[in-house]
Length: 81
Image (cartoon, rainbow, N blue to C red; front, side, top):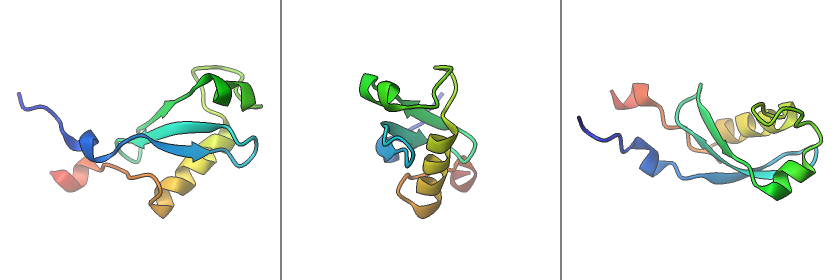
C-alpha cells in the first residue's frame, strides 16, 4: 500500500471567526472533510461552541469562505485520480 501524501501539500492554516475572533487551524482534505485544530484561547473566545464535537456556525462560515477564496487549500482527491 502506498502512503497518501496529498495532505503534505495542505498544511494547517489559521482561520478566524468573524463573530468572536477565535482563531483555529484548519485543513481541508476535500470539500466535504475539514480538520479543525482548536486551542484553549479559541475555545474560550468562541461564544457558540456548546458541544466540543461540533463547530460554531459562524466559524464554519468563515472556513467555507476561506476555502472558496483560496486562503485554505482544498485537497481534492477527485482531481488527483
